Picture: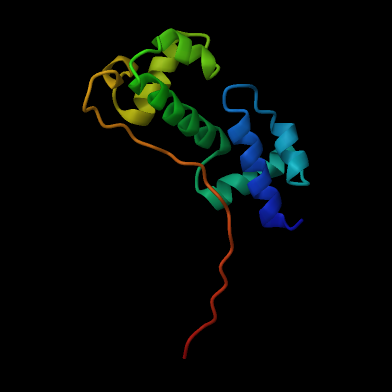
Length: 127
């Protein structure tokens, strides 16, 4: 397994655990490095801190859950690991620019942050 495959495997682990606990040490193990080095590598390659990526992914999925109109905000907050509705509201607003309650209204646009994947493309220099 090469380096890029290990990074993508770590992303898969994060995606599978967005509603649970994401262990940074486990991410490091998957990528064959320490948790500290994984976070540094991720930030360098993805252009954003690992914690920010995870927050954006959780808020994207939370918005989809809320758009259905049936889910309660407090339940969605708990599903994505927020014990405080205030903290969830603040995180949601920082990502989407609107309150979670506004998403339930029809026609409201939300931002979507799809999962990232890593790949390397090598191109030669043209004369």
